[in-house]
Length: 177
Image 1 (tube, one colour):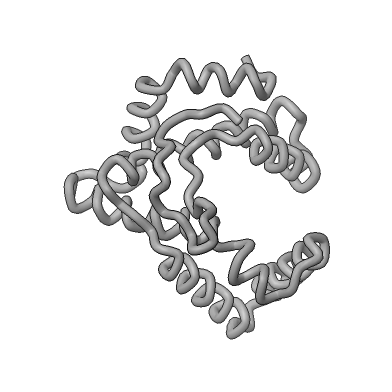
Image 2: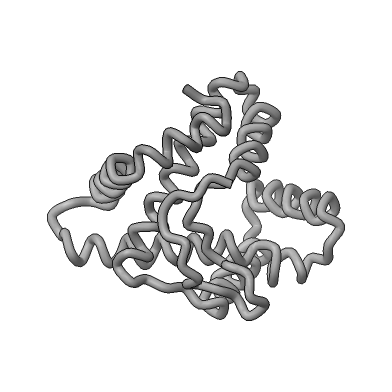
């Protein structure tokens, strides 16, 4: 794994694992790029570009949140997971049924229970979502004249400049120019 950004042990779950990953991950990149190829029919090159772009956005935002002192507790991530689960289970829209089918397929592939999926497996994803929401609120309070998209772009650009060496190392490790 290529280190890039903050490596402090903030945002740890009760079982000692980090809920928030503030570094690039080759494993996550490969999994997401493969999914993009399978589900969207992207070429390997296009899937790598998109997976890199998404991970760069996530790592930059998470590092900014950590830099300004934003934390997410396991309880907050758990609450977000449960709210999402309840929202999905109570909706009648057609696409919600498709989402639930996709979740059920993923649960079966993982070989875990539905409760384990929502209560443990997805906690990291929901911790990231809560952290992003908190950062969005923080940044919009600090810079009320700018919208979130502008602020997020500035965060990514600043991170790209300050972490260019590590970003280039990660790109080499995943086979990108």
